Image (cartoon, rainbow, N blue to C red; front, side):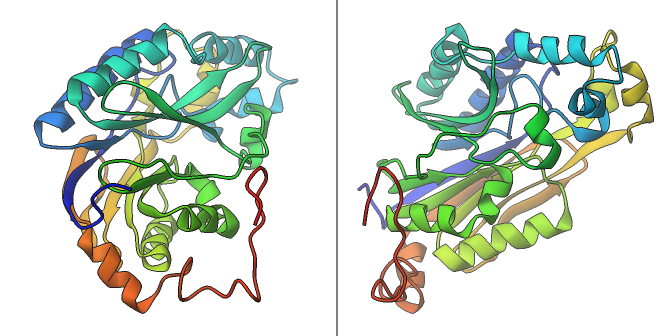
Length: 309
């Protein structure tokens, strides 16, 4: 289960990918991960769909509509061509970054399956470079459903580490109460929340999860502007009409009592770090343990395939 009373430094890497260029994004990822590791981070979180880009609604609206813009198909084709297969040389590159940094590494990717369907997926690598967990977003949100397929019927579960159990939910999965409860019941101590939500309301969500689960929360968002897009991007008119700042960030690291340990960071790329005292989780759960003494399994029971009971 790991040292649940020890300390660990974590990092949220708020950055833009090299939009729609998988190999260049992987090179940037390697540099950012090493910088975070040099600052002492042993858990490093990258944003949602970082490789090769989050399909922002203002820009990819023609892709979501699909039928009216002749550039929609080529734009989607580029996104798919630069997506990540699991396993592949791309996942090997991420594994090397984790090994070099000697850190747990969470990366959001556009995953491409053998048939061509794309998924919004979180990849969690161990410090040895092993791919410890592959989690597909259960429900793509609103117009994301025109780009990504839904995840499998598998409940979110934590991954045991030397620092206690890590759990990961992507973006608005964090609004799913039973998804959170599934992680709490599997012993979560540190909650990873990559996202593309840069709203003020998202900050309330990060703090609520910390308070509800008495967990540390690492929220990680992108900072992306129109200038990050390639000059030959297919949806030029959609990009021209979009706001200059497509995603303003909002990465933050939150303690189990809801206080900010770092961030929120808006308006720029940057790496947030914080040292977590995991004893705060144990102390917080004297008051509230929603998967333990504050639960009522005689009244409420979460049944999750393939985990029953």
